[in-house]
Image (cartoon, helix red, strand yellow):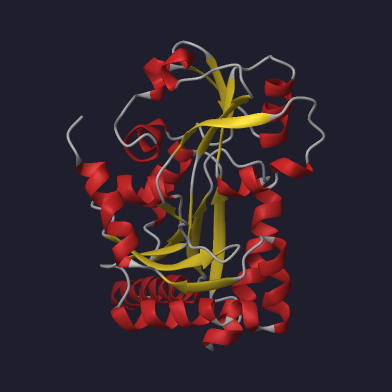
Length: 284
């Protein structure tokens, strides 16, 4: 076999390999990054639930089956690294991670959940009733909760720049809100910071001591789907938003919405997000 023919065959083989790799890349499911800092859900359970959700979204949005795949994490640092590595066009993030990564990854809100008739919530710092009268009395005290994974978010948004929880308190993160609340009930913690959903469930817990909020945040929007505006088009973002909005009215999607306590997905409200962006950017 002459050298010219050998060279031609090598070029053909290389071309076929490149074409195969390109085809595989084009047909690979697009990653949807899901970041739930401090959450109690395991990665396997979350990805199973997300797979069910994405199949419904694909059907409603008329995408081919398995167009999307999820990558779930409860660690804020892992979310940051996966945003850098995966460069997802769409992601589900906490408000804190959205605000932090907004400029670096050109993030824009797409849709947010409505829960118990509201698209916003309040964070509350709970103590045993009558034990503390003012927030400054908790300085140096042990504070628990599942929402302590993002201290910058707590400082800038939850406490609106009034204090830095890292220096004001002794932070005791927990993977489960009920464990932190039981520890508060027993006097093992001085306070617990809870989000709106956790506060709403407080009445169902068998606690011995009544609780009260010594601090309540302002309105904080519930975050849902966000998109990289440079990795997605306006029409793609609109299509994804419409699919999510139809999810809770779908027979299969309704079951998933009920599982997560979501009444509906609605278009993200710029009017609710802008004050958060302003707070985040304020000098400390």
